[in-house]
Image (cartoon, rainbow, N blue to C red; front, top):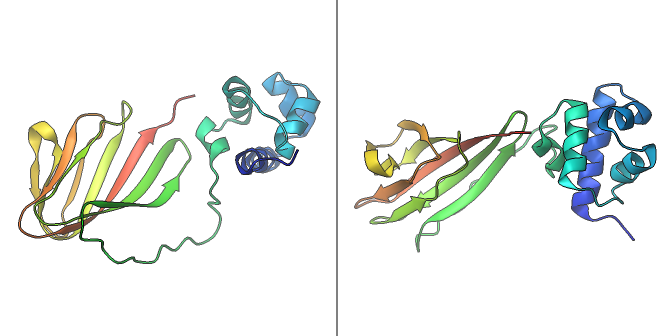
Length: 183
């Protein structure tokens, strides 16, 4: 049976991280408490590991578990071209996901005039940062909204109820969400 794209991606991440550390497959298997055959199956993308197995490998490699699950290739230059705004309602667009101790996502959020976008609280310890590219809005924790304009930056705990509200003009902003990775 051919490997799934996620299994193949996990296998590639395992090989990459092991090679970066100059560690043999036998050494990684020993440190993770796995058989060499199990590790071989993981690296080839043909195994269906449990979270506990991947966690053991992540600990043995000294990387966050999320790094092994990353399907993106962080190597090289990454360009995201601008897109046209959809004025029919709020529009979110994931621009980038960055791993390595924290899971970081960069979103573009476009809000039409007279719109409220309510954010769901994220995991404990998550921080949100937003930069307003254009327009004016109120944003932040629901209990303490801040008035913002073009060029303003706001950082706040993302693990509480929060929202974004425009008035008579649309707003275009970039939101960076940094969530702690716990192993």
